[in-house]
Image (cartoon, rainbow, N blue to C red; front, side, top):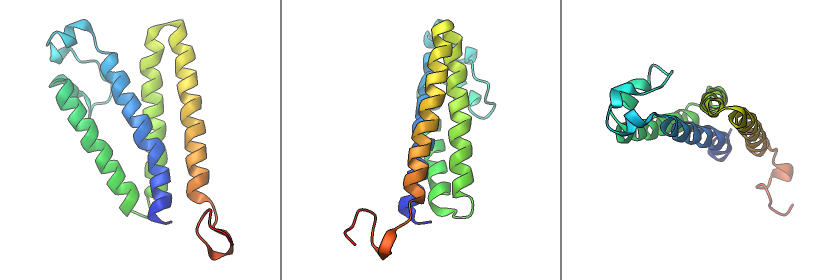
Length: 142
């Protein structure tokens, strides 16, 4: 799989991850935003310590995490597909979990988010695995 193909696999993973991070921050209580960061709400035991240090630390952690995922997907050929898929699914479920907390409309938003993540992933997957016909580059005249 070429690096270009792996970038297509990476796109939904980092996009859904970024949305999950944003929803995590939106889902924090007023007390959290008033400076009581130790009251952070986060089910992920790896992300919670960063969130409990404050939103800037959490955002930096999220950026470093996304960069690490990108490095693995781009350079670890044997695992790139699995890593991209698992990260996308995990963050889609995590983001949907934040949305359902907003009541009835949140359930609808969670379903819409999961469907959008699935559709976006499917489109990127098709683009990543598209066969090159006649030995030319995708979109090139044969």
